[in-house]
Image (cartoon, rainbow, N blue to C red):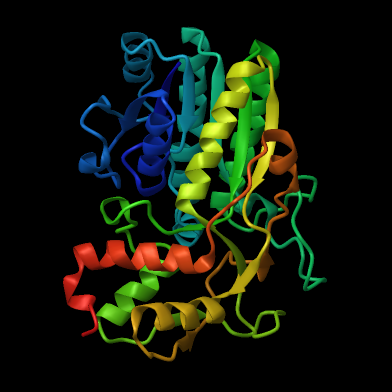
Length: 330
């Protein structure tokens, strides 16, 4: 099969491309390079520059490369920005997906993997410190970003039922780490690189709110190594290929909750810094606790995360140092 990977020049996308090609699958990257980096794409993997809002460009790419499956990662993904710019997020994430699905079904593509998010759940488990989020947990997103991901799942599922397209919606939890320094997350949007940036500038890391209903007052998340996440895409893609008409919704996480304060403490230990965090007001749209149950994907696909928090932070830090050598502690 040939897989078109939208957003394949991005941080997660590049890891998915790497994992797919390592597994012997053919890949084509489709990316508008608004945040993606062309140099992340292997030289033997075609790169088509274009927007998912451009149906004609998508149709040509699907036909030219004889695409038989799509992994759709291209999206806007910042919770706070989505609160400020909801129309932009709905246009890029929902309308872009609709245009892509229209091109996919017209081209007769058989399989479609959708990058969803734990943001679809909102704040599902505030009442219990040990509660895990299953795929049956009611969805109540707290931000326009989460709403666009839930709407995307509906659109993907409805298209599959109407056309026979095999589909999977993968609900990512918090992603960190790197397969190699070259593929590391260089954007300063997620917690780990945000802390790295503050440490590099000799500034204290920031905690956005310490008055949540959690043991230490800070938000709790489930962190997944990006290499594990990429390998989950390979397992999903192969399941769709072998089972026409399949419809999957799967959490991608480890089932272990880590608080923001615990994460910062671990980052300080790994990097050699000792910078106590400073507390700032909450960000809009941040739930207190979201931790995955990963039982379904283990049952359906035989997949389980294999890398721990130390692996995530260590590999992420090695990538950060490649781009910010001034951050190294002697």
